[in-house]
Length: 116
Length: 112
Image (cartoon, rainbow over all chains, first blue to last red; front, side, top):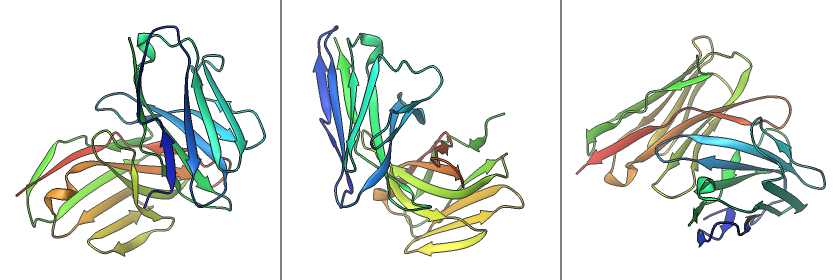
């Protein structure tokens, strides 16, 4: 069964609103979670690395004030898309890696965000 | 040149065929190699995870890593229509956050 849960799976909202996406590791503690964005028929693009209890590390070109990441516990990370605009419409996917060395990333089922 | 190269396909084979998917990479610092399967509008699902050269088998799936040639493969035996998906290779370094570097993904269709 799924080991990473992502919610909501699909959200439609008006331009200018903020949207929060949750990512939970279900049966393990995840010291590191990752947030990706995926455009149609393309591979995953890493947006940021989220470490529990510290600030997220953003990839080059990703606006940290636009995409707010909070990793408040070992099982939960959130991504907030602030003042969303149509160009932010995309498929957002999180992943989590178990505590301990050399563990693979497990992915959530993604959130389809549509900004009208 | 991309760090990880993967033929995007699409690849279409008849049911029961052996499928061979592969990726090449340029950075010899990659230590961990993964194959993920992604169905449409879903997140990637981990299929295989290896960290050394050689073969690893799990049911109908076999992952092969050749570090000397910087080449990894995924073989699917007795392919089923339910195997139709996009297959992503991914790899990471030993140190740090172990961020993944993905291939472009290969779209695979198994025809009944």
